[in-house]
Length: 270
Image 1 (tube, rainbow, N blue to C red):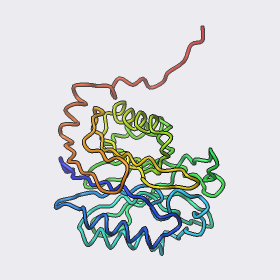
Image 2: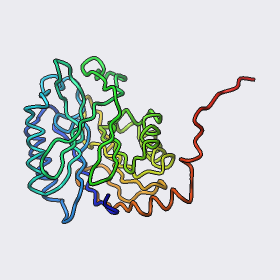
Image 3: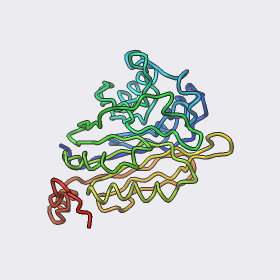
């Protein structure tokens, strides 16, 4: 396990339904911002087409011959970097999933995570188009145990506690989060970091969605005590942070919250 990891998180405004334009935009944002010795690059949810469910089905790709996976693989090899690819719409056995791919430095697809909780409120229809995933996923990146999640997953703390109990060091939430829900986004992402004593990347899109709505565009890299190591507000660009896992472990040994969790909580009604 590496004691220190250099992260880069890319915030972008996707062009709705324009996969090729968004691929070119990601390439530009990465290549114009990447720093030497970057270990991991992270992208937001459905960056390929933006948060517009009506484009999901036509944009879906089989994992085995995905143009998105091939693009990310080539970038990973070119820049000798691991990529947590936000998410795109994948097709598996005629079922669609909102899928986060993870690519290693050699360009190999080493893991995928399918979004477990689907957002179908306020006119959104993700749940009628996409099948929910059935398993949380931990992926080992350079020895760093990393728990994956996507957007609406953040409202379910049980998911992140299950990661913490499996010894995760880093948690990711790749999102396309609406601008009207800033307080829940800020509160929940920082809470997940604090309650699990874990580094947390909370990355969301910026820019227009549809019908006058917008993505929040407020992304963070958060430390295990809830402090912001890096932040970007509305707009496009990248944020960076060096994560020190020795410091994280020393803090966990001094503040033994995770060791004090009860195996079972039986509620008494009086």
